[in-house]
Image (cartoon, rainbow, N blue to C red; front, side, top):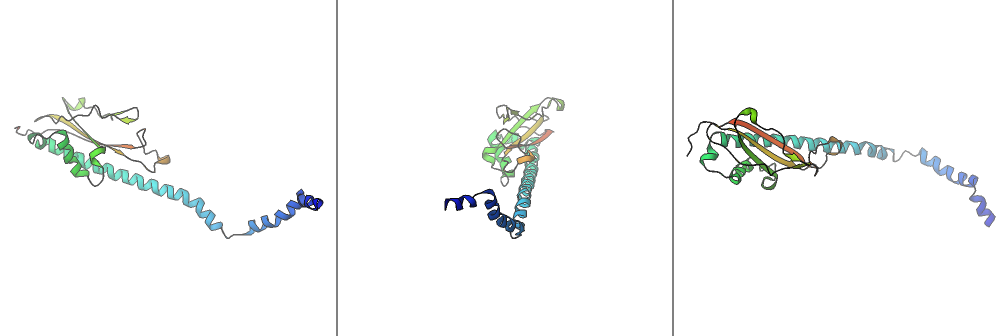
Length: 190
């Protein structure tokens, strides 16, 4: 009996036992469509999610730009100054514009600065060490005739960035920024 088992385990015996199974496996076409679909579906689904993520980022960016334009107009016409709005009240006005797109209370940052001339405006992003630096942000809407820059920042969470490199911050988020630069109208201060 031992000799019989030994002969079955020889190379020739194994080959003769495995060969019919291997031939039957190679001839079978039952799962070919499933395997081909798996090869094609994985990159397609990844690409589809990447396109959706990029589209949502552009939509969010446009919404932030619109909010910066509307909020900037409140300062340019003197409405924010004559009403005596604080930074929090001004942010509430901005949040009214973007409430449907963003978690405004904790993720939208506002920087309103006054400059002596248009050429003195600093347009660099406040990123240091791969993170948003909120320490230098302020709220100074100026007075009649002041040159003002209103910037809105939003840390947009990137879920399907992958090889598209959509994230600009070290935490994996992408920083969306919207800017409005203008000279205040000669409104009557109170």
